[in-house]
Length: 365
Image 1 (cartoon, one colour):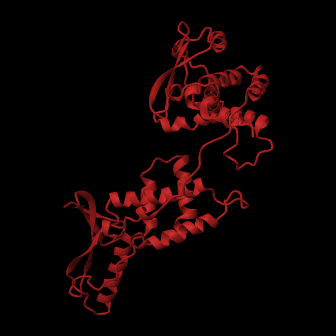
Image 2: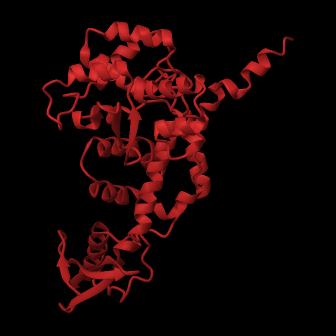
Image 3: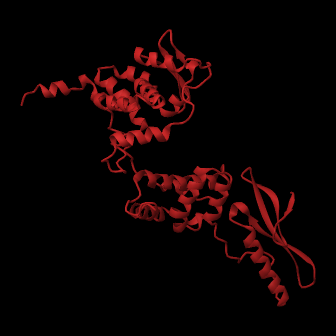
C-alpha cells in the first residue's frame, strides 16, 4: 500500500479499499521510552477518522512517553470520534462545480442544516421530525416577515438527503437516514392564464419594441418555453409549410409546431438578411420580459402568490388553456405542448367545452 505523509508530523495514511472503493487508513508514528519507533493503526477515513484526530492521539502518546507511562498497544479504550456531518458536507461541496448554485446551497446548509446536526452517524428519525417542525417555524433571512415556503423547505430537506447519499456512496457513513425525510406535497400548478383582452393589452404595450413583441407572439402562439424560444434560429422556420422546429431542453427532444399567417409574416420581416444559423434573439430578454408582465398584470398581487402571478411560463399555460377552451382534443394539446406524460395535459381538460360546463349551466335552477 502506498504511504503518504500529512501536514501533521507523525501522522500518515496508506491507500486502502473499503467495499471496493478507495479509502485511507491512518497511522501514527512516535518514539517510545526506549527511543524505538512505534506505529499504531487508528482506523479508516470511512470510519470517521480524520488527521486532526490522529494528531491529537499522537500528542497524548508523546505526553505519556514523557511522563514515563507506557502507551497501550492498541486503541481499544479510545473514545470513537464523532463522524461530523460538517466535514462530510464540506467534502461534498468541494467536489461540486464552483458556481452560484453551489454557493447558494452552501448558504442553505450553513443556515438551516448545520446548526441542527453534528454526528452524521447519530442522526435519527426523531431528530429529523423535530427539525422539519422547526423549519416550518423559521422566517426567510431576506424577508423576516415571511416564513419559509413549502418549496424552500423541501429544497432544504433535499440538500440534506443529497449529502447523506454522497456519504453513503463514499462509505463515509452507514446511517441511511434520508429515507426518514418526508417532504410535503407541493401544489405547483398555475391557474392563471391570460384572457384574450389581456393578450391584446400585452401586444399593444410592446408593439414598438420588436424583440419583446416577437417573443410574446412566438410564446403565445406555440407554447414554447423561454429557453426554447430564445434558441430559435432561422433554419428552424419552414416558411413553405408554415412549421417551426422547437428544441425542448427540459425533455431533451425536438418537436414541430404550426405557425399561423400573422406570425409567419412577422418572422419573415424580422429574419431578412439572417444566416440560417442566426438566432432570432441576440440576447436573453428575461428580465425585460418579467418587468413588463409585472407592470401590466402583477401590480396589486402579493409577491408570494406564485399560483396567480403572471410570469413568462404563464404564456405557455395561456397557449394550452385557450386550445382547451376552443375544444381542441386533449391528445392534440399534449402533442402541441410536447408533454411526455398525458397527466401534465389533463389539467387543461376542465377548460374544455365538453367538460360538463354547458350541462350544468343549462340545469336552470
